[in-house]
Amino acid sequence: MSLTLNLDVHGNQKQLECCRYWSDDTTTDIVYGGSKGSGKSYLGCSLIFSDALTYPGTHYFIARKKLNDLRKFTKPSIKEVFKHWGIDERYYRFDGNDNFFELHNGSIVYLLEAKYLPSDKEYARFGSMQMTRGWIEEAGEFEEDAKNNLAASIGRWKNDEYGLTGKLLQTCNPAKNYLYRDYYKKFKANVLEEWKKFIQALPQDNKRLAKGYLDNLRRILNKNQRERLLNGNWEADDDPTAMCDYDNILSIFENDHVATTGKKYITCDVARFGSDKARIGVWDGWDLIEVHSFDISKTTEIQDCIKAMRVKHGIPKIYSIADQDGVGGGVVDNCKILGFTNNSSPVAVKGQSENYKNLQVQCLYMLAKMINTFEFNISCELSGKDKDDIIEELEQLKTNNKDLNKLDVISKETIKSNIGRSPDWRDMFLMRAYFDLPRNIGRTKRAALL
Image 1 (cartoon, helix red, strand yellow):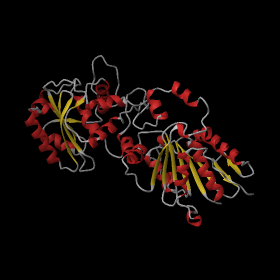
Image 2 (cartoon, helix red, strand yellow):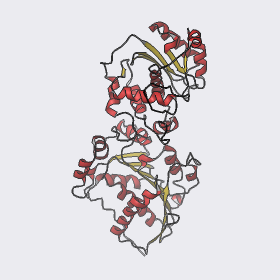
Image 3 (cartoon, rainbow, N blue to C red):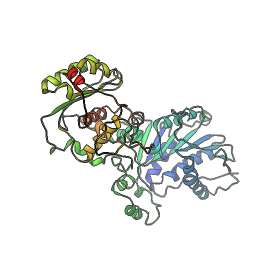
Image 4 (cartoon, helix red, strand yellow):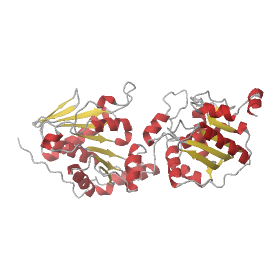
């Protein structure tokens, strides 16, 4: 049986651009998307199945976070592509038990569920697969480890036989995960690696959208959703778990109405022997007036900085605090300042019924409140990169209330996966909230600090 496959992009130049990268010998990683209605699913189905039908005996995957979404949303797009190509069930069979398409020429396209499993935290289950090429749909829902392990399976099945470069296609809407960090930001800065390609596709690029589709979306989407899903604005975020509005986060560098009180504090997030950054902040009320950062530091350097800042600003030890988990305990003991233990019990606040998972979560909720009520200001001079890092970290203030009895936030491990580093600024900021909680240091502790 012979077939003639024709991918007619109908004037969609972004789809055509993606096809060129899919066909070259240098590109191995393509991110396509940035909005609804840009033809992502049709494109992905066309590229995967055109290869599978052209090269006998090759293997491919289409991955989504949930298998049910593949069945409900991706399979109809596959059938649409087949219909346009005149392909019927003489050319393929679908195995509903193991979820794969087997084509008449021996090629196989697997539908893979890529959800997180506690028994496979690093997604090692994908590492042993042998695939020719692959497609991740709705990559904005993926963790970086899932993407990496899926990518590692590509280029391992008959690529040399057919002279095929291994290719990973990722289609997505704007998302604040590895896509934002490793593709969008590098693309905007013109520093994207040669083997990677980012294609910003918008609804107006798709000439085959149903009449009235965009007008309907404009009516039903909120402001942030319109910015993200229609205008392709990667800076906007409509995540319902987000604790702070993006515009409110930006305002922390301009809230010059925040009054200084003359009551000053020091907060310190201690680096783990260079694995993270050490951040020491000096506060006047809720105005951050001075910052010292260390890329690689010894605890003695951090201690000397804290002592110097205390003397310079006249800050008592009882208004100075450092993260005492790990090596931070030595800084706390030697400087005789307060120690912050992330997993310690939250502080009871009269008249409040919230039940927080731990002290860190309690302080993060208070930090979010100060951001959203425009009561947090940063007046000290910062580099553009520092500001970008701060914004990126505060956008990771997101709830994770799986336990309905206790308020919680997403884990630091999830944040590290999303932004590729530890949220050191956030950790230094949250300790400022501790001083606004009711506390009883006690005579013995107070005497020891003084």
